Image (cartoon, rainbow, N blue to C red; front, side, top):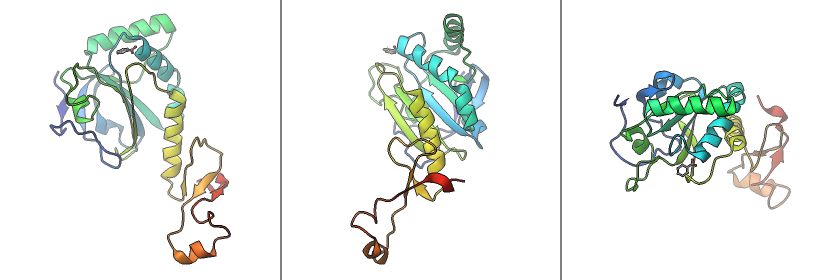
Length: 218
Ligand code: BEZ
């Protein structure tokens, strides 16, 4: 089945702050549209190929963490250029070998239409494999963060979870989220843009770098 998309016919990647264009495609959970996920956070991730070692390790790790993503109100969706039947056979193999159920949808993208539109393959790529692209979408379908790994290195599921929690905290608007932050740790105050505040600050760095306990988190 050709994906039914409103995707731009271009290879330019979607940028942070943009609404991810909708698509409708076949998946291991039936026909899905990106817009079906509106109202919840979504991690959409591509992988180079089914039945490969690094991808298998990622699917096992992500499937085992599915409950932790659900607790954050975050759905999961995977995509590769392999066929739906390949996805189904691979999920069965993962189940048999690792006793893990991959219950999130895995989309087929044999024409690369979705992968190209989202920048999951380079415009001049020598083969059809998508890279390990990860897209973090907010409940409005807006891209809030993304990452890109090569075929040879698997992603960190802990960092995917941390990214979702950090994005959710930052989206409350009143603070900034520092490096390596995890929930409960101190956050950063949004710096003032006023000269009078800057001159009134206790030290020469206080105006642009001030931490505070995160007790005020909503
Ligand atoms: C892997 O997942 O192990 C893999 C996928 C594509 C190329 C090389 C390795």
